[in-house]
Length: 490
Image 1 (cartoon, rainbow, N blue to C red):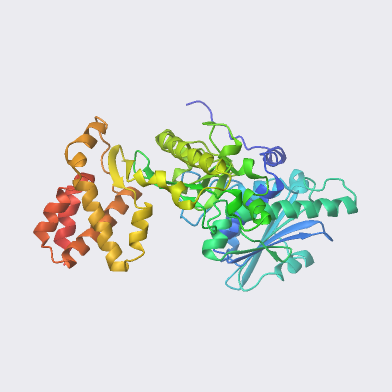
Image 2: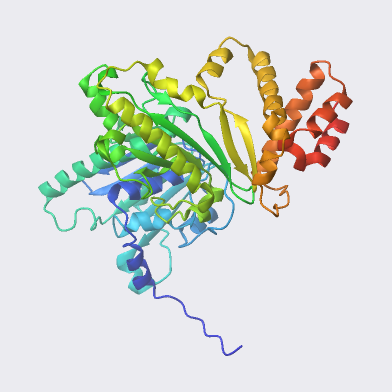
C-alpha cells in the first residue's frame, strides 16, 4: 500500500451540493416529518411564519439528549445498510439536513429530553469561516423557539429561505408562502395518510389539521378489494404484500365533489397505478413501472404494495425516499396484479354505471387458489379474501375463525396437486438453506405454534398432530422445528 493522505471534503462546496439533490418544498418537509414520526410524535405542527419568513416543524416526540442531537446533526449520521426498526422512516442519516438545506441556508434544531433542552445549528453563510462546526448558542432566538416546546419534543427551524422565496418582495413572498403551504398540505395528506388513519397521528399546518387522502377510497362500499399476494425475497429476509383495488364508477359516488376528491390533487389519470409504501410511508404514487401506459380506462385501478426498510437496497430507495425500482423477484407478480386490476378497471369504467357490485365481482369467483414463491419454493394457497369465504367468516367468532383457518391450511397442504409433486417440479434445482434470522422463518414458526395449540385443544394427540404437520408440503423444510415445538407443547 502506498502513502495514505487524508482528504477532507471542502465544507462549503459539499453542503452547497447537498442543496441540489432534487427536493421540492413538499418532499423536503415530508422528509423532516419522517424524523418526527420516528421520534414517536403524536402531534406535528408545521408553521409557515410570514413575519420572520421561516418554517418551523414542531413535534411532541421523545426528544434528544445533547449528545444525540449533535450526532443527528452530523452529515451522514447513520449507516444505510443497518437494519432499522419498523417505526424508523429514515435511511441515510442525511434527510433532515439535506431537506432543510434545499429550503434555506440556516437549520436550527432545539430539542427537549427529560427536562433538559439542547440546541444546534448549521449556517451555510458561516461555513467558510467555521468549517465543519455546529453552532450551539444561548440567545433570545433560541429561547423563543424553546418556548414552543412542551415537556418533550423537537423543533426544526429553517431560515434564510433563499430556495423558497429567493429575492421576492414581501407581498410576493407571502403569496408564495401560502401556495407552498397548500402544496405541502396535499402532499402530506397522501404520504402519511396511513399514520393519520391508523395511528391517530395529528399533523397541522398553521393550526389547521390535515385530513388524510386515502387513494384506495376504502370508505366507498362499491370499491373492490381484489385478492392480495405475498412474496418473499429469495433469502427470506423481506416480505412484499401486493393488494389491488378497483375504485367505483363515477355514478357510485354520493356527489360530484366526492368523485373529484377521489381523483386526487392531480386528477384521476395521474393517480392510477401502483403505490409503494415503505413501513406504511408512501414512497411512490401512481406508476405502472413502464409495464403499461396510462389510459383513461385504467383510472380506477390502484395497487398498494407494502415493503419494509429491510428491502431498501433491493428496491433502490433514494435519499429523498421518492423513487424506487422493482426487484426481479416481484416483477412477475406485480405485472400479473396490474393485468388483473386494469382489466377489472376497464370493465367498471366502460360500464357507464350499469353494473352492480355483485356482477363485477363475479369473474373473481374462480380466483380460489394463489401461487406464491417463498425462498425459492413455490406453493399454492387458498385465496383468503374470496368473497364467499369472507361472508362465512362474518358468522364465526374468534375461535371459529381460527379453526377455519387451520382447516384451510390442511386443505392447502393435502390438496391432490400438492401431494402429486407438482410443486416440487417448480422448485429451483438448488434451494437456499433455511435462514433462521429471516422474517419468513419467524412467521412460519408462529403459524406452526398456532396450529399445534389449536390441534391439541381440539383433542388430537401429539402423535396425530406431529404426523399431520410433518406431512404438510409447505412445512417440509421445517421438520426439526416441528418436532421441537411439539416436544415443548403442553
